[in-house]
Image 1 (cartoon, rainbow, N blue to C red):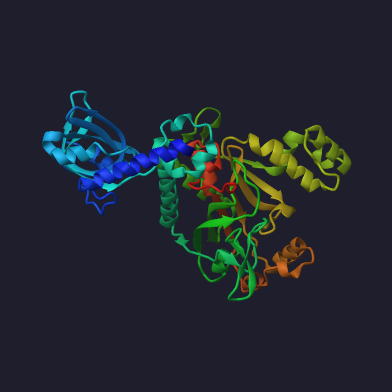
Image 2: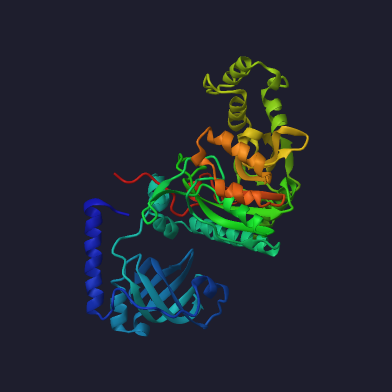
Length: 480
């Protein structure tokens, strides 16, 4: 889009064209318009001489004497229209000459194929539906300012059909996940997004003020504790497709507002969640993408089951050395630094080990890998493994070097849960969700739970390199 003096000049020219159209009897911002179908549907059912009424945005226009050819774009699809002076009449033809690229039109007529083989609508009558006062970008593909594409996503969607296709795929992926869960008997529910305590995960929340109650509140960082209340209340299978908010950094795989589907199944466990996510993701890939090898080149991922399972400890030992857990703390710190990791002097072994895992191991896991048996301090809401209380019965599903879905055998012991909350709160009782603990004391069945990061999953399935490419309006620094 043009900015500055030239942009103002173009806008003034379009305002002048608007005036010309009004003088010829064309209202610049029209009414509802009845179509026989979308452009996509019209092309799919194309038959010569068939009548059709379509609508769309003018994205090309060329005049050849007493004839004008133009293309109307409807979503990602385009159809050529042919406007002939002796068919539409002198006034309608003269008005069409004042149409600009970007204007929305409705057109009715009969379908035919041109001598060059292009499917076309021969227009009997056309209607102006909306006058564009600003021009479309002329060479959008050549723009180097990626941030401008995110800020003006509407132009990105108009100019780049592949962008529109990716977001259409996102819509279908979400719909297929919903259908897959519903077909397995899971009930979709809704839980509060404004909460008195930010619980269910370790993250920095966004804080707000509820004036009517005179209370500080938080945008949720996870729906977990409310969904578990529903397990207490008798729901066997529940899920919530939810927005979560975390007041943390922005990068290629993090947006402060993000989408997850959180799932709980009474009488299930970590392994039932593994089976579920493998089934859901492979079914979605086959249905929406049409294959199990997704992405291109170095980003290509093979989703063919069964997926790899590896323990956290084994992955660490393979990277850090077989003696890693036997090293004195200072020796472990030095070895980590030898791996070019930035290790503060006050970190304990667990923090050092997890830094090594996140920086050197996780990013190498391209194809789906269930990383299991994580240290208990990393996952305070999961059940300990029966054979080793220092690790928990969980998995982190990692694909293309990023965590896509954590899954747990959920902790349903209220006494142990209270102890872990107190340890996590470090003496601040206000941070402990007493209401949740009370619910747990009424008895929660053993359960499996899982959260699937929708944005990251869509990155994997569509081959996108940044989370901003799969979020319609990603968070950006304010202008100025």
